[in-house]
Picture 1 (cartoon, rainbow, N blue to C red):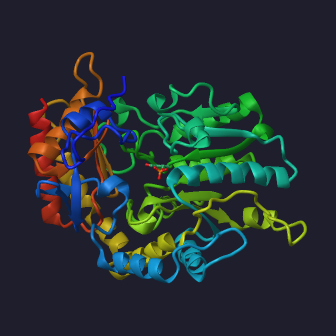
Picture 2 (cartoon, helix red, strand yellow; picture 1 turned 90 degrees about the horizontal axis):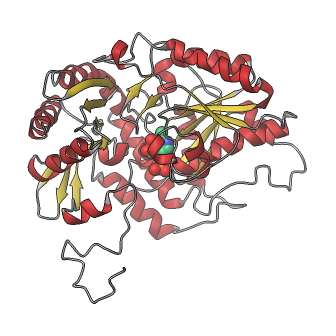
Picture 3 (cartoon, rainbow, N blue to C red; picture 1 turned 30 degrees about the vertical axis):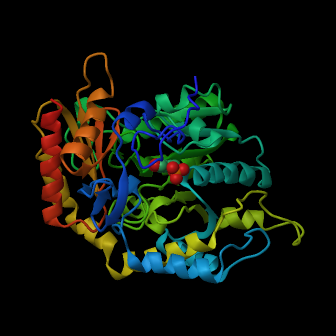
Length: 447
Ligand SMILES: Cc1ncc(COP(=O)(O)O)c(C=O)c1O
């Protein structure tokens, strides 16, 4: 029963009942909260004043590190000059400038940017664009959407439906109809302890041919994949896999969507993972790093031919009946422009690329510690699978996150019993050493 009795002010850490936290073990958190008060560069500051090193870039967002004054100032200036502008039928110059800057970073041919406010909205926007494109193009029978097992595309109905993380779907019934999934690209026996893209696994793309054979190409609108599956615990694409997916989708007139919400803006050492793999999708989603996490923003970068197909009919009519009240919000645009300046001026994508081998070697040195079943690295990310406790899947992982925060001055993320490391791209070699040392301590503490 809900306890409505008077409670002390929220400064008492256990008075946390009203905030139902997202994707959080609420009861465990509220017994032993992890509360943050500040952040600068590679560190968070806890409410009790401890400085903890951020091995997660917040939530894969803060690629340029924390407390960037350029971004804070841009946000403040923008809020004072123009707090809000309607994005339907009106515009602000900054939105056009930011779209140009993002299109310049994206692969050639992807020249149009549609803004929204999150990765979930970006995924749903891309899926709706794919469906609408086929309608406009006289192929309205193409309504199926294909995701991948262990994929994550946010929490909208579209993204949840094409997503492939079982726990994220099972509470929500049938979701969208006409959705299918290709298999995950992970096989521990063949790939364990690989740095970068595994040699084994390009053939997983061939499974798309089986779905085409089953459903008929003329019923399939799009395939959506993350170039590196992040939220499931860091699964890099096998060598040649994405190229093969591109070939198969192209052959059958199926649109290919890369969900680059995590991999965008330098995480894999390039502006987008599409560049790292030399594969150009038809639509590419982004969020998180576009504003360094300082303001909510997401979007879809779209191939010219798709955008142009919409630009028909009477000119006074809306071409794509989709958008959000806060699409291209002035504050997010200001944050985005300031963020892209930092990435460029400090050469952060190049730094991520240059330091990747050191990162991979350092993280791989944790092999052999108790319960470590696999370590995967790619770009500035790593997934470390720990053996689950008998009959308590996820408990060792949760303990590791608690141990890291409370006793080791380290922030990391978990996916079940997998530890996910994704530090800001500003990380130095010394800080890599510090993070790996601390992760080692955590792994031993939860053995
Ligand atoms: C690949 C991918 N797509 C979509 C999302 C959803 O983004 P958001 O939480 O901003 O809605 C995420 C979030 O982690 C993600 O990793």
